[in-house]
Image 1 (cartoon, rainbow, N blue to C red):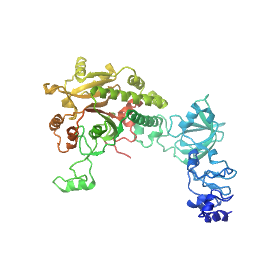
Image 2 (tube, rainbow, N blue to C red):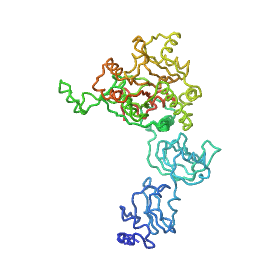
Image 3 (cartoon, one colour):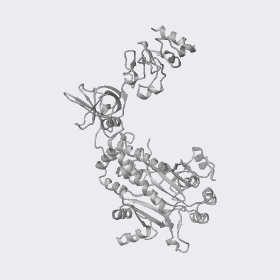
Image 4 (spheres, one colour):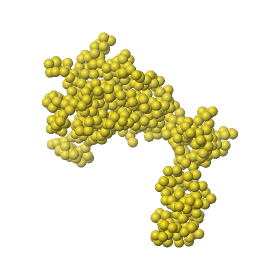
Amino acid sequence: LFLFPLFCLLLHPFPLLHRHPLPGMRCVHSLAKLPLSVNSRHLLTRPQPPFTSDARRHTHTHSHSHSPCLQSPTLTSSIFISSVPVSSSRRYFCSPSSPSPSALPKKLSVSEALSVAQGDPSLASATYTFSGWVKTVRNQKAINFLELNDGSSLANLQVVSETPFPAEVNTGCAVTITGKLVLAPERKHLVELHDSALTLVGTCPVKEYPMHKQGLPFEHLRTHAHLRARTNAFGATMRVRNEAMMAVHHFFQERGFINVHTPIITADDCEGAGELFRVSTAADDERRLSSSTPSLNFFNREHTYLTVSGQLQAEIFASSLGKVYTFGPTFRAENSDTPRHLSEFWMIEPEVAFTDLEEILDLAEAFVRSVVTEVSKKRVDDLAFLHSHINKETPAILRQLIGEEQYKRFTYSKAIKWLQKKGFSIEFGEDLAREHEKALCEKFGVVFVTLWPKSIKPFYMKTSGGNDVNEKYRVVEGFDLLVPGVGELIGGSVREEDLQVLRENMKKNELDMESYEWYTDLRKYGSAPHAGFGVGFERLVQLISGNKNIRDVMPLPRFPGNCRF
């Protein structure tokens, strides 16, 4: 038996044998291309993933259908070939008396198991394999229970066993379990796993495990951000975040927008606020310290920064592609230690050519409605959990966002007059504070505030009206979308397309004309009216999920005083 496969391997180069293997030698020729080893039981082994239904598509097949192992190049009618197991204590083997690869346990996620219960009951009562982390273990006198979660769902998979689970299997352990999936609609769990075989993949010292207790405060979880996604609240939040990301792309792709990746390292300050992270190398820093005269950095510039917005670069592509959007990380060096601010966050920034203020307002409203609706439909269980445990007011806010009534729209001037009547101390030309946004939302719900004072807005916004208006009361075609619970969700504007007016704005803001020459070229060569807006993705996720602290919707948040991981 030992010499037989070696003999087959020696004959492999002959083309006739390759095309017409002899009986008893089927599939052995395929092993000649693979690294082989012989274990103590004389089983030929090679690295290969566990069998799944998809694995058969990548295997070599023959016309000899009478052999149960012909679908895999590593299986023969006379030699046992093993696949690399999940752990060294567990192996699958295929032999003439073994089932075909398609009959071996299929690997499912917990969410797929739940869909079996809700969709096609005929798929139940079959044997499946699940891998994940243990939530709880209960060994009782007559029957024993284990709850498994793999992150795919808020719900756990309950494993039922008549045999007690080993003492090493506790909360936090990584395990792989194979068993029969059984429908159990009359119980709390829709499905259960019976007749199971368990493999302990990774142990967990439960007394040291920071997540072993339930109901841990968010402050504690933030100090263990690398483990907090195993909790129900953060697992649900990350799934909602993922769904929101997909909904953003669906919205723009269905409307013919082109996704553009704008630079993370830039030489400009889009917002003009000066709250920038400077980018330099260690060599750049050493030169600055050793020399009293300014020197150029790695990029042959005096300064480069992490981007605060991709808007200006998006305008480049809107000027040629028509409709584009960016979705990427941005950075603000704002030393603000509040539940509403992050130093690193993601921005969604569409830019559209040949449009005006009313059309861009319609696009912003449609965007919010679409994303909130899609996430609400696809993450029902996660949102129900988050809203009931974190913020019970969120469902009412989301109903306003997706309701049939159009969002309110009024000018900044009217907003100021209304606030003054309500006793707020605010004058025309001042920015709206948090308390002002809250008062407006409580009265009007979801509202667009348009036509803001030019003096408090960036240089690129289009001036509204003629030059005869008093400079103090001149406004730009900008807007903010205010939403109950979060305040400003979207900020946008029509961009200034007049080259002369843009240059005057840049001079007033003391911008380096040479550095922005490329930006003015967009107005010099075929200028067209265009507009866009920016949405802070984390703030959008915070709105949908109901989380009260924006740091809890970012996987690994960066904020003043914190840059772990």
